[in-house]
Amino acid sequence: MSNVSNIQIIKWVWHHMTRMPWLCAGTLLFSSLVMTCQILTPILIANFLETFETETFDPAYSALAAAWVIVVAWLGYYVFQYAQYQVNGYYQTQAIANCLNQLYGKTQQGFIEWFGNQKTGALLVQITRAARGYEVFTDNVYLNTGLIPSVVGALVVIFILALKFPMIALGLFVITVAALIYLLWNCIYKVRPAYSKAICEESIMSGQISDRLSNYAIVKSFAHEEAETQTLGTQVDKWKVLERISWTSNHNAGLVYGFFLCFCLIWASYYCITDFMDGTMTVSDVAFVFLTILEVNSFTQGIGRILLLIQQSMSDMEEGVALYYGLDTER
Image (cartoon, one colour):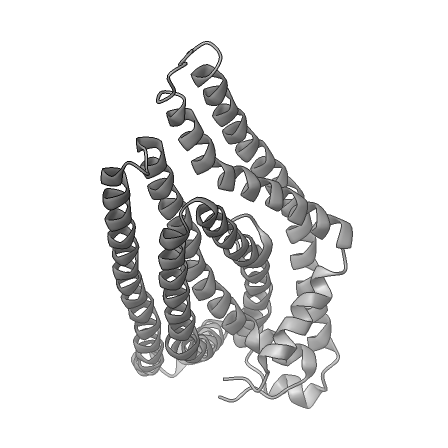
């Protein structure tokens, strides 16, 4: 594992993000518009259903108008999402190119003795993996499916629900926060350590493969094919065990998150049934509550996946950022 800190990784990412501020701002703008359309969906659907409950029901002016608003919101969602991906595509490819050029330039500044002590295959993997790690990290922070829009979206949807049904919103907020705390704890203390170690072992494994392929004639001349294969197999087994631990920890978190969602549904169902029987809640209100829960679930479930990808991408960038800062990498 490398000696680089999380702060150094974030500084390196921020350096490349701010090199093209207008493109970054454009991506954030379209991401906000996409999130707005997504938040409005349960409200608009509930309003559409409410038109069928009014005594002065007129499909030509109420239900049809409400349906058209839903269509416009959905159309806006896909149009803004397309614009976001177009801007972000240009922005990210240029940023990745900057990362690759910068890290490769660092290798050319090293002394001959330093370069001679490095495995060429491992350096190649560290540079390319850091650039891809940057892409995954930034995409999962500010895109419409990223960390910031997901957190803001979940809080806004719960706030809108609280304006009409505060007790349901309170329970949804508490359960959601508990789920997010668990997901964050799992990513930091379970997935990230195992994945970081797996990344280190993968770099060693890639370096061994590259060296063996580059020196194939020497290995063949001494008839060491079987011995070299066994040595590589031992390294592959080390990587396999650590990678499996990170995957299993993530899947376990997904199962636990499912229980949190069930608690949300039980809490909402209790209040919906009692309020409906008391006459204080209509069918459109019930639909609004459950659509809101599903909307919050889509945000929070995405947050769990996003936290995992962010943690993994930071592990991917560790050795490349260590190369940038000139730090040693433990083997």
